[in-house]
Length: 302
Image (cartoon, rainbow, N blue to C red; front, side):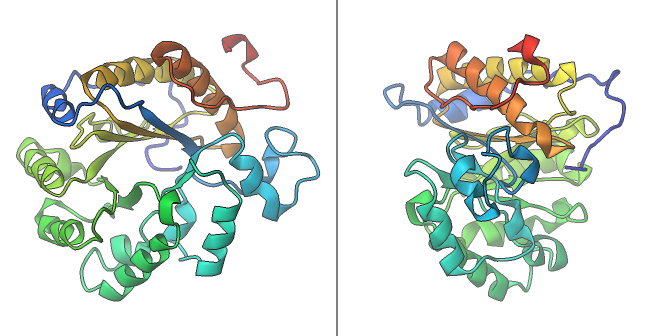
């Protein structure tokens, strides 16, 4: 991911924003401590050939990558749907290759979010929703990344998307224009997302600390974590996130998506392995461990 990328992160303040008081009230409204926390850990895609010998067998074919990916991860951001809507037969084949607990999180097509800027795009919306329906029970929270040119004055267009999506359709929205985070605009936006039971996307990246806003609007957290190729701060930041998630869980968090990005995706499995191991230790969860077939580069941290 290039968004918010910095070449030198040595002087970046990676501390997360102060506690958001509204989160506790939002989480408490649906709190059910008897239901285990649903954790979905994944990457933007599964087609990285460099993961051979790391999490894929050395002789794995391209069309087998998803099967081996799903042996380690239980979700994928499905960034590819931003550029091309897959055929129904392709989706059905994908669903056959993963377990029952696996969730696909398709990203809205760029014709909707970037080219048409949420207006005059009903045909594209129909195609997108028809596509997502093919995933059945394996459809997770879909991901609407707003164009950087979309500003708070476009909130009516966003409301139309939220209000007219299929019933029960789980959606998380990422905001990239800095004007959304001005106090009045942000408060209105959060109220809108709460009204339509949509989640916020929290993106933790070096060069845009404003998008690490920490605001929740329902009992689902959707976090996109952008590391720096296993820089030591990647691991301390993961530790900080696990501490925050532990607090959210105590307050009533029911579902968590944690998507690992690295400038070089080769390094995603190591960071995912660290996250899975440590969140299981801290929260007594049973997220399946990431099985890396070679010694991790930062093995001393494990």
